[in-house]
Image 1 (cartoon, rainbow, N blue to C red):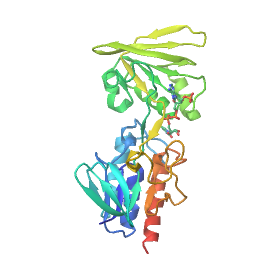
Image 2 (cartoon, protein in one colour; image 1 turned 180 degrees about the horizontal axis):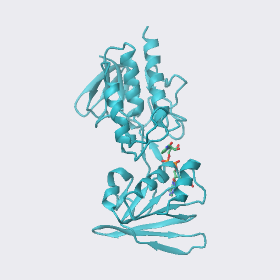
Image 3 (cartoon, rainbow, N blue to C red; image 1 turned 45 degrees about the vertical axis):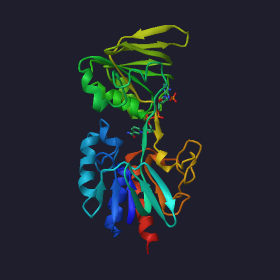
Length: 307
Ligand code: NAP
């Protein structure tokens, strides 16, 4: 039986692994279906992680985490965990072909980008519609692109895309942004970004070769068309909580209305031995530094409760 299973290899999972192994927990396994690093690895740049003064790409930033967090005995299994269930005093983790028992589990499965629900969005997803500027931005070198959203992600990725695209239209449904004021300022001062505000997107259109453009409606119901081959949608995140569901759709631990896992200040869920960290937990600040703090807090609690 594994002493501690950590599910998800982003900042929360890696930090939990580092603290648990360095703190003396022996058999600690990080389950991550891909390479550890998490969603932040595909972020264009990180400039608000204290101690890392030089602005780095998400990939470059997580590279050192990967080396450091495995230094004290943490192991990585490239497995997708499909389900977690309680069995007596331990937990059973199901993969496609086996069951793994673990005494304690820290769930750090994070969140995924939401779809905006625009007509044509699903149809053209992967054929001109994307949620990752670092992955797909290059396809639009010297071309015009549109970014949808008004939060930190949309604005930061719009700024990143100005390094590649000839022009970036930032389309937002209000005239006020959720993003940090300093980021809003950078966007407003960037000559390659044109703001299209207080509009409703009607449709993403295209043909067999992919996206051709976007139609939107202003406050006076006037419809405009923007001919762009690439559309980046950044309209928030939803939590990855499916592994915590029972067969009947209920959850093995308490979650709030948004499906975020309820935790106490030690990251303990309502189920003894089960912890939730990072974006998946209630009231998460959705910041790398906070996810990392959650992971450390949970592992310290696992260590303390094992004495
Ligand atoms: P977010 O802050 O929730 O912003 C989502 C944006 O999308 C909002 O502007 C929202 O408009 C718009 N939106 C939502 N649904 C829409 C729809 N159906 N159609 C059109 N627009 C829609 O999401 P996020 O930018 O992904 O950020 C998530 C969290 O991560 C936030 O807490 C953010 O601060 C954090 N984050 C931080 C950093 C950083 O610190 N550097 C970087 C990235 C993300 P309304 O404003 O009108 O609701």
